[in-house]
Image (cartoon, rainbow, N blue to C red; front, top):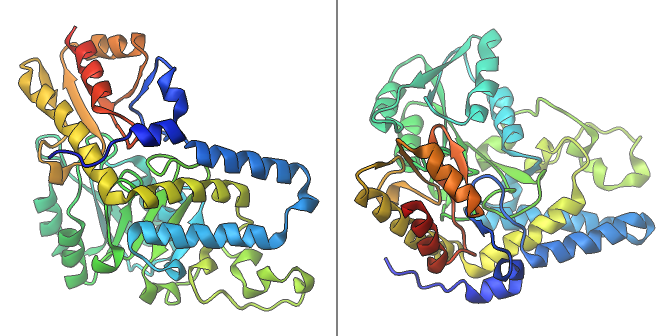
Length: 383
């Protein structure tokens, strides 16, 4: 597939430093570089924060409201279904603790990021055990997962939309349909796909979807969201309860007129004072992705990834970890080899920003990367 998108204009406007910096950045799956428009907002809000009397309360509320609306637009949800969170793990803990699960078995893939494991292993005292579905040829065994959902003891499933180490994209429609058919809750960690792969949560049988914004969404640490399916928003009770969950939290003149009246929408799950400044910055980054278009970004990343995949498949000494099928991968491209440490050392010496995960080199290009950079990268690997 030929990408219809040319990143030159975006690089000149938002990532001018890339023209002079010898480093090539291929590590969005760890932390995404904030665009210049977001950095400007960060500077503006830092100046206001230094003189907080200049920062209107309404501007803080507007930053949060805009964040909910833009995150919703990013994933095909309504703002009323979005609660702002500091990270993915917080949203997954909400799912673990608030969903009314009976004692039984939860399912996930072996090889999942630990945030899809530990919060649910912590439910053992409630009679809920987490079962890991073994990998097949190093990748999630979706057939085995779907088959296991038919068991009567299964109460919930939690998976990553995109696997952090392999880039494998789960078929959320298929897994969700099996969950819905057997009255099983479906929870999704969306961080490795959100912002760079289109998704319509209203078209999918997903109960809770959590994502941090610091990676592919190019936003500050401490920003993220959780989607709670509309029918569940008022059907589940927040486990953590604070003043910010209540309708009275928007009126500072009557905070001690205690009224235990939770917000009717997903704000009921926002327990604490929000990081308004960081969410204002995240809004600029999210706006960039929405303006470029998530589908356009996805196609560009696919084209870059296709070239790396073709290189890996052409080498007898390299094993592709990521699925070769573009429909089964997002931005993460992972491969391994007998001389993996030597390859990683060459990349490091050449200032190619990457990471090694689970015994494989992981590359994660984004909308600011170019085909020329990919060719330079592969030339370094071929040395």
